[in-house]
Image 1 (cartoon, rainbow, N blue to C red):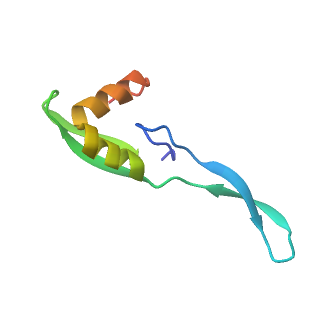
Image 2 (cartoon, helix red, strand yellow):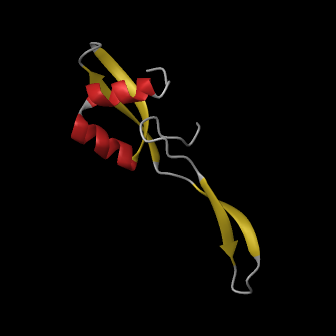
Amino acid sequence: MSRRCDLTGREPGFGKNVSHSHRRTSRRFDPNVQQKRYWYPAGGRWVRLRLSAKGIKTVDRIGVDAAVDRIRANGVRV
């Protein structure tokens, strides 16, 4: 599963772990991406979206119809 939010576009960030002796090793900051099912009334079916925690809050605020429209505008097939 790719760690990318369908709605907000959040994806992993990269950085360094820094030890006590100040040695640096690469690390990855993954977004909190979850798969969540929503009833999509305009389509009369369930849709499964891959959303970050912020994306889930956005869907709760703007509604499923508007969220699916934004996701489709980004070129993602729903």
